[in-house]
Amino acid sequence: MKTVPAFWFEPQPWIDGCWHRGTEPCAVRNPATGEILATVARADAALTARAIDSAAVALAAWKECPAAERGEILKRTAGLLISRRDAFARLLTAEQGKPWAQAAGEVDYAASFFQWFGEEARRVQGRIVPHPQAGREFLVEHRPAGVAGLITPWNFPLAQGAKKVAAALAAGCTAVWKPAEVTPLVALALAPLLAEAGLPAGVLQILPGQGSVIGPVLASHPAVAVLSLTGSTATGSGLMAAAAAGIKRVSLELGGNAPFIILPDADLELAANDLVRLKTFVSGQVCVTANRVFVHQSVEGLVIEKVAARLEALRVGNGLADGIDAGPLIHRGACDGVGALVAEAVADGARVVVANHSYLSDSALDTNAFFPPTLLSGVHDSMRLAREEIFGPVIPLLSYRTVADAVERANATPYGLAAYVYGADLARCRAVASRLEVGIVGVNEWRPLKAEIPFGGVKHSGIGAEGGEEGIREFLETRVVSMPKAGIEG
Ligand code: ADP
Image 1 (cartoon, rainbow, N blue to C red):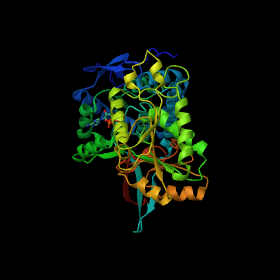
Image 2 (image 1 turned 180 degrees about the horizontal axis):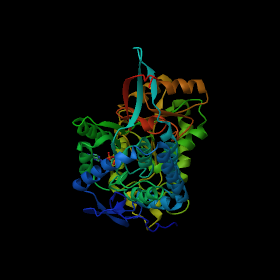
Image 3 (image 1 turned 45 degrees about the vertical axis):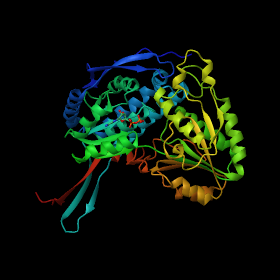
Image 4 (image 1 turned 180 degrees about the vertical axis):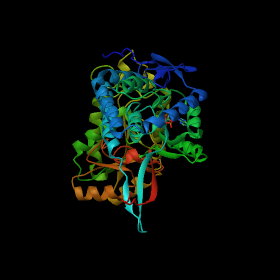
């Protein structure tokens, strides 16, 4: 059994390079056991405004700091994170619930964004465009947008922050980051590393607190130029409306309803393995996880058999214990929500093939926060769990007869984030992938997201992108100087 590490940070707001007394004490709990990990002093509206004001002051020097220097600080942060992987992973598991191995993977993933945007900082290049009039030229340049407001969810408390923080800082913006209410610790834990890496005070402020308190201040403060949120579609829509009055830019990563299409010629061992890995990853509490599994009717029986065997073998429990495959959901309320979706589907004719309750044997757990990894067959498109994000370890199988039908049904949702296609004929996989209305498709791959590529949704799943060359552009504004060409005469 691994232990919760001793804290190297304080559970309160980080502003101007030091800890500040917050106003509202709030307990942060380990979802697996219910144990209180810390009482965090959260930021209120007044402290948020103050943090934004001083991020605006810090902007003047940070945007003039050479890009290579900004990049070095970010790359040093990546190195520091990797060197402290184990402590960060234990903290992440304690706070979020995911098994230690997944948490360690998240630390590496977060570090990859600091590394990537550390490199990208030097590649923000403008251009000179020929002017249609003689003797003049255009200079096109990309400038930091200003102060960025960053709001992140609880499923990847470190990596979602790293994606935004690294891109904003690389662009030359200063930032105010509000982590999710239930997972502020790992965000605060990052502050001393950034300071150690050489980040000047005030360039990143980290404010634990409530979305409904901090969000409106970020959305209305005149110094904030960009808002970047990863969260639910309802929160994104509300933030966009709040940002409209100040004509602020928004970058939104929102909900999904990903189809996972198993073609008739798919390698069913691979498809079953990857599907179970995908749905046990953070216990299915991931916006890109498979939400509807479309299986060709000719292979449905075999898929049920293979997926059921894998689900039954999973060890579900405390993520700090050795050999655990899946942890709890974030809290009891989340379990109630998933339970209601499953119960409605069963009442409507779906069948529970497997429900793995292996966590019940551990008396040290708060078993109300666990949901059994479940396989459901006989799911229909009209059921609520096929229309809404499940956000739990439930695999709903929907049968199809023709590939065209599967594609049409896969697209019949307002969401458009991720999709998965499993098949042997790569030309057909590609044809299917190109018809899916989503931001990213994994072909015979369950986790295609990497720092090197842009990730962002279409339709109600979002606006803008994170990662890749595109990620930094969310925090840049383009401007043009039209000027005469200088002569050489003295
Ligand atoms: P989830 O359902 O995954 O918790 P939310 O959209 O509720 O997703 O939360 C994602 C993030 O958005 C969290 O940091 C949360 O505090 C924040 N948030 C919630 N309400 C608002 C709001 N009105 N304005 C800005 N941020 C908000």
